[in-house]
Length: 269
Image (tube, rainbow, N blue to C red; front, side, top):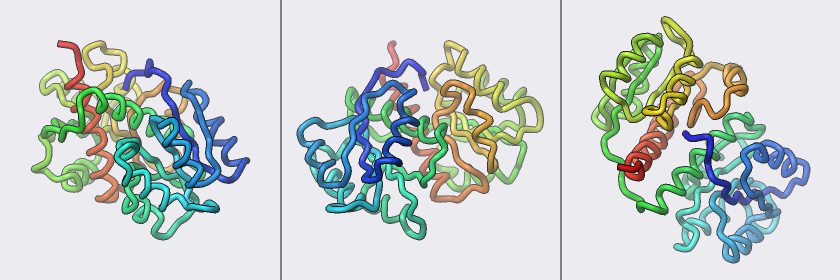
């Protein structure tokens, strides 16, 4: 994903002042315009006056909770296309309820700064591109899965659906580079566990190559590994912690496929 993304407007919906300031501090480095609301009703009022490009929604709030606010946003044709990321400390069924309410994504508090930032940037990028070309269904993507684990490579393909994409595999950095040259994949699913080489080196090489810059990368990482990537500037478009869970794998790969498809449609001839 290009690091030179134009500034856009993010509406933060959070009733806790301390958590609102923490969220603002996490988002400020991205350079976007940040607005705030203290509950769902205030968020809806602000959105009708000045629609943002993305909403980050808390769930437990007075007046109107995040679930109801999300439903209202998605029910209104004027705001339905605005991506909503639910950010909550609620456990149990909060993720399922968020997606049922129409949320585009879900993060649990306290969110990793890197994960929050890459998700925000990816959804903003998709929203911006979709406005110029419309909401077209992604074509069958070509996906390169790079992992030293045969189990992980099989899980990615089985979870997403082998008939939903053209899959190419690699076990390490060297083989991945060869597969990229041979097959020109639309997106890369990159495990931190490789048989040879470095996942970070591969990710940075892709982003620095003019013909590959912008290729969506979904990073698969173990507990505690994500912070090792925080020193790199936008090295990936999304990240997911292992062990993999089928519904989340499908959602994350589908998001990367949509980004890749929109970028291809808007790429200069």
